[in-house]
Length: 637
Image (cartoon, rainbow, N blue to C red; front, side, top):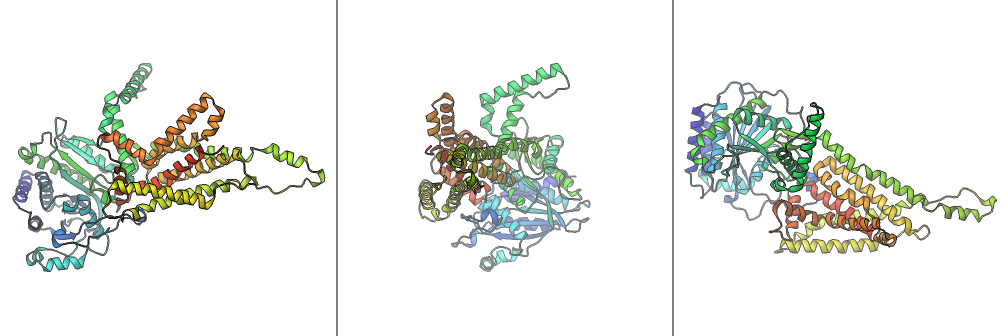
């Protein structure tokens, strides 16, 4: 139903925005949006917010969304101003809403941002007069001067809580500017439970395809994903309705990897061979498609494991709202000037189709998947498939732990027999034995290391207080304090076994048994919170735990097998160190040219700023397991 008149209105709206000089106060665009929304008969209000600085807090992950830290030296010009327009559905009861988000920088708006706002206004003008609407429509023009995510998250936080920003500071600033006070609509308006949200962004980056491209960003914090049906709707309407080339993120460096192409050629050859034997065995896949799907799968796994949202849509998932970011890229970078009418028409009709689909729902999205990994815009790997790989990967851990414990408790039965054989038969009474309790001393050592890992998790809070220090300095201090703390706890607790039951032949076996059991528990717990993090962690920890044997034992045996095992243990320990993992992944994805030692601190800082559970896993599961494996390797056999 989006007509040429609606598109023309959106184009005029876009041109008016571009004529504003907003370098002074940044209030002109909100005022203009307010006037246009009120002319359409919609409700409007402004939401003022300050930039939030997320400093490290050990309980951020468990507390959920919070307001962060407001800067003390604020000014009235520091406020961001979101403009919120609402259309009440003529067939609705005000209990559900659909949200459209268009981020823009109010201090220096670009043509691409203005075009995305023109799309939203054209659609808003259409929806203001239709009669089939059963859900309220909310248009959030987010002021992204402090970041796109901050603008959306601040509005959502006030939408779902009783406090609406910093009212005291807001009143002072409003009183200091009478013209602003007249135009500000400070009453916060609600529109009911959000059924879905779409973030609309237009970029001036040209695509490598022969037609316009639509990129879908879906990853939210801690591996959360929207319901797959929302992605399916956008993909279907974009491809079959508007002729867009739909794509999702992929790791581009994997597209030219020789071993991946060789594996794809092998799979293609096996598929053709199976098809020649039986036409019903049709599982062949072209090499190019296999490589591209693998690169997309790796990107989906990496972004979910990182736990950082890939766009402002991530703020909605913190409130269990299905949301994605739609980024439109023209086939030529100059198309924004020459084809803005065409882009307005096609994108507007695409969003209209998505709004119609969500509007027709009697319930929220729930029938499809929430746990999945994307291999393309139209293909995915469901939880029922990828959990099998994880289960097979960690299944040996409890078996090995039980086997090692059994071997340790039965390692010296002959000594027990000799001890009782030297006694008279009349004194042979069942005597209490504490052989089965030897694992408690290994458990104490594992507990001390995990206590140390909790301290390491909290150390950045104190290190971050050091003024005028570089990331390299902070990381160095973090490492030095961690080593000192570990040595202190180890000497203070005393990790040796009691001399009455001490046996160096079984100490490392019991230590490895308890370590493997603790690793299994940690990976299983992490798989519930963020599967992608647990999967990548299992790929590193499982080989390290299973092959860990004292190096002195391998040296004493002095065989080729022992030599290979010792070399593998050293490699696994080196590759499994969190700092090494970070630099290897960063080099593989971005290149090794611009890497700095302090980059790991910046990465860890971003994880706790985004409340990522990956930071908790890295410090409290992966790191203690790595230390315990080193203790096993260096055990004095």
